[in-house]
Length: 114
Image (cartoon, rainbow, N blue to C red; front, top):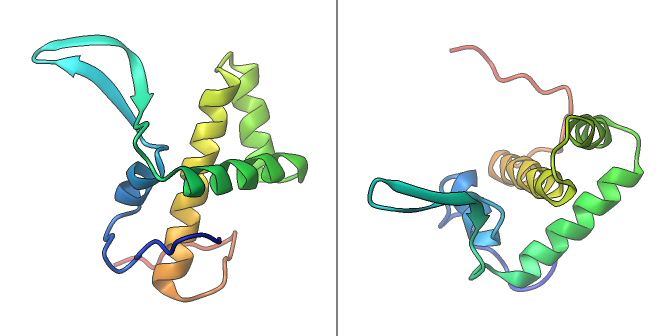
């Protein structure tokens, strides 16, 4: 990824990185009332969100699990942009794991049982 660096050491959770990139959904609520659908943060780092969007669109062009996920969710009736946002979130979690572990991406990775 290019652009101003994201300080991965300062971000200790992929969910925080997703929020920073503007792909984490939040419910619109006040007190005990929930108003409408979930929304994403519009004060996010636009350059990072743009890069994630381009990566998600590229992933849709390649046969694989992300393309299958997209097709399955759209077939279920989900909004296409909602599914693309979920793909961005999946990509963030993968990038975060690769950077934190310092190892190449392994799509067959299974965490060791404790």
